[in-house]
Image (cartoon, rainbow, N blue to C red):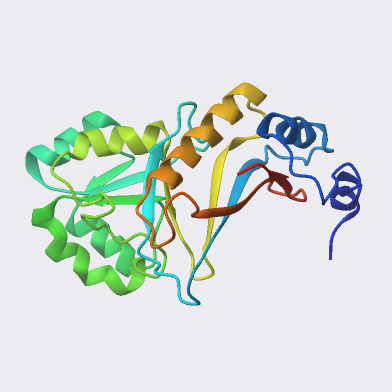
Length: 224
């Protein structure tokens, strides 16, 4: 059930209007605030040409102004690579000890990185971390020998996105406390990443609809 604040915010939005990004951000800024710093979310609906959408469509982008979230990065590595991860600012570094914690049900990180030589250890907990979207893979760039760079990227605000089974992408591109200019820069960078990704849709027409919202607000449609 939609709360009073949500309904009040909705009164300022014309559902039949497609706003410019700048206009939409002004609307979001004008909504009554929650008691916490809400995320500003971007919801992209794709022009699917089949009922089944391949969920292997993913991408990543380094948001110019970060996500506004503190990202906890764990690294499964040994030796020199473990030392590199520590120096780069990883929150947790280890190998068998981290695997043991995961097996015991302790998952206190948002991103898990691993070096290729430690993947045999990671596979022991694949059934636990896989469903949570935490399984490191080479395609996602979370299995890498460039471990220091990967740690720094995620700590700085690297955003990974994926297409869901309904042909939608959902991404948090900052906080409502960000300035309108910083939010616009982040959202534009995210959309460049989406539009440049290889998708099985007619060229130039992958994006059908875009809307933005805060965590607790109604959506505002913006021009695609």
